[in-house]
Structures are given as structure tokens and as C-alpha cells.
Image (tube, rainbow, N blue to C red; front, side):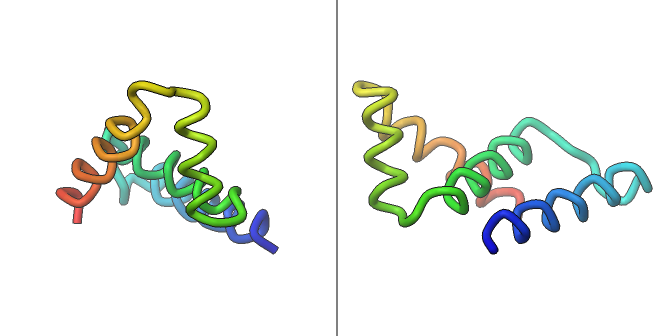
Length: 74
């Protein structure tokens, strides 16, 4: 069910990009990737543990930076 949601959101983004209704920037890509990562994990705690395991020292910065920049999009 989650995969269907992810694919439908991606399809909407791609349609808007190809129609010229949506411009994509680096901060938008960061937001989309984190959103997809959150959807593919079972919960937020597992997501944070996975990020911290992959990037032990810069994990909190990797999580905080795209969210802070993504909030400026809205």
C-alpha cells in the first residue's frame, strides 16, 4: 500500500515537471528524498536509527538541514 502511495506522488511530480507547472530545485529534491525515506521505513524511530547507523557523526545534521530548508519552500 505504501509503495502505491509513493509511486502516485512521484507520478504527480513528474507530470507537473513535464507540463512546466513545477520547477525542481535542490531543496525540493532533498525534501522528496527524505519524504520517500520516511514512507519506506516502518516508523520514524527506525528511520532515525537507520540514518544514525549510516552516518554516525553527521546523522543529526543530515536530518535537520533538509527539513529546515524544506520548510522555507512552503
